Length: 244
Length: 244
Image 1 (cartoon, rainbow over the protein chains, first blue to last red):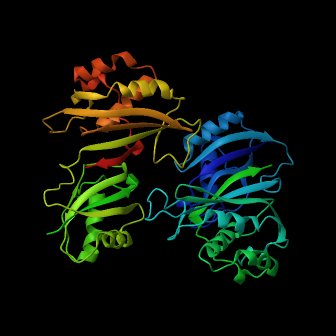
Image 2: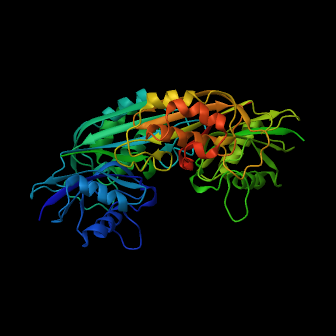
Image 3: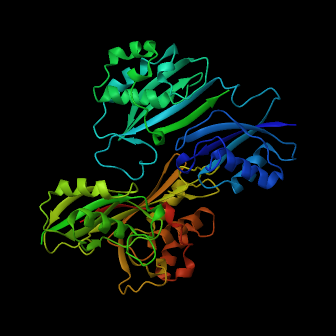
């Protein structure tokens, strides 16, 4: 059957992540519901990664198979009439049989948003982590760059993960300011469970003086979760780019 | 009793506007609940304007009276611990007895956001009006400027309003693009019921060729609601600035 790669965006506030779960609404389930409503059958959909409850995606990819007589852009239009307002498709293209939304990924980029405005901002509360002190984005940029390289990141992985190979290569990592938002961006060939949120929490520890920037390399090499920072809350995290 | 002017922001998605109503949650009620929780009494709060269901505010002002021994910034901090995530206070200051949050307003500015991206964007759906065709922001800027001046705007007022004086002076009106957002901004000494949304709907009619830019002045002078455009949906509207 022809295979398609679809790209969507979603506001994860209302969802328990991507992956289908019992007794919780997930993005995968909404996507399957929407496809089923015009295909007449319920296709399997395979996502590019799991995402946690409350995490957002500016670009998320999944593949599915269908022999329906619908064009690539036809799929985008059809699914957008069926998806809820907080999920939308932006692209769809035919791919080869051996393409896999998860295993064919070369790199992914995540952005983590800190908000350091003096008072809460209702327009950012679902899309950032509000920090009560002004952040030094230049210091955090230097700290972020310590994560560039190929390392065993098992100290930056929440327990409960069953991954065997914990080596990942980070190609770029940076922090920049946009008004009261401080944006941490990181691109790698893959990420361990909660890795971006733990790195974001480590940057926060650098910001409040609980971790020294010169100790970051040792913390990575220690492979000890307890030496890294806290796991930053989910609502600041965006999957922003998936490269195949 | 000492009188205070408080400035808040709110995401109006979940609210039936500012004004207290039976059987519907409003911003005014949440603000009163929050104040009551630490003042120990329920103060009257008087807002700078009514706002409709689903309309947002980057800056909304109200006054209240209290003889509690709390500093201006103390009020901001205290209320922010009590308000829900989609409402926050940004400022509070003592004002004179004769100050009135509504009648002392010199000008207000509203912004109306159109989104003309090719596909829906879940991050903008609650904060803009999605238009299915690319907008010409230069044309709309010219159209907006036709509204500058002192006119009887009764053709740009929804029925159900009981205002007697329908003359308002518009000091500035403009349209600019930011990526896929097209932002209409308008500042006036006051606005009739739904006036900004009807002007926004009229700009939309200009965009789709249903109203000619050269006819706008005549439409204003006609004072005929039926000649203006549709009432644009609420979620694109932001009260952005209140000047006293």
